[in-house]
Length: 239
Image (cartoon, rainbow, N blue to C red; front, side):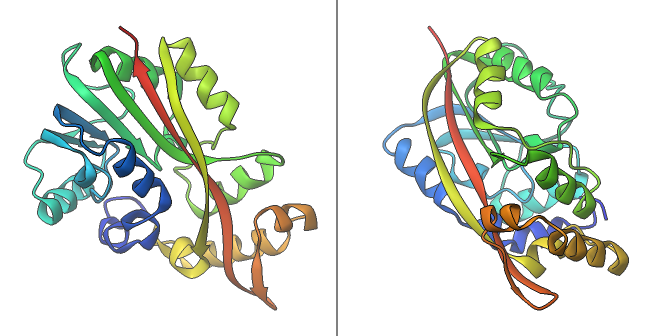
């Protein structure tokens, strides 16, 4: 496992390459043009590639993710760093984005604090991530079995509360359901076969009400797909 070893998997990932969340983002900012934008935890670069900006910086802790994003989308300003410790001057960016990544961060409040710092006044912070409703402990446990870098997926109100506490204003938000092809999703981090089987078993052992919440599709002991929720938050650093 490890993001350096799985960068190509993320480049090919249908979960990352397309999605209603990306369509929402592109429609929301259609016609706008930013000078400097930053994609935090950029992975293979799909989100940053949609930024309407003259200069696009990419940040990730994985060297191979940065290299894959650069080679695939032409980004020429990669920075290896954690999301909580951004090596940029204050008031630098017009747009900062982070997609399907905050659930890996050790300290999301510190992350949001540093995003607020590097944003210019009036700048946008677009956060896209998995969110949970009820039974969040069960869902987070499954994610951790699949990927040991997982920390926690939050509820919508928790994300909004953290951002507002750092000084952001919530301009808009939306919620989308995302169906995941199970094998592609479960094998994306390059797990061992034992770890893969543990992920399968964890899904099979879920209470029926959680299986229903996840719209779990299975054929006997073979899991076909499941559906989770992604939220898009459009935050702004108020003038």
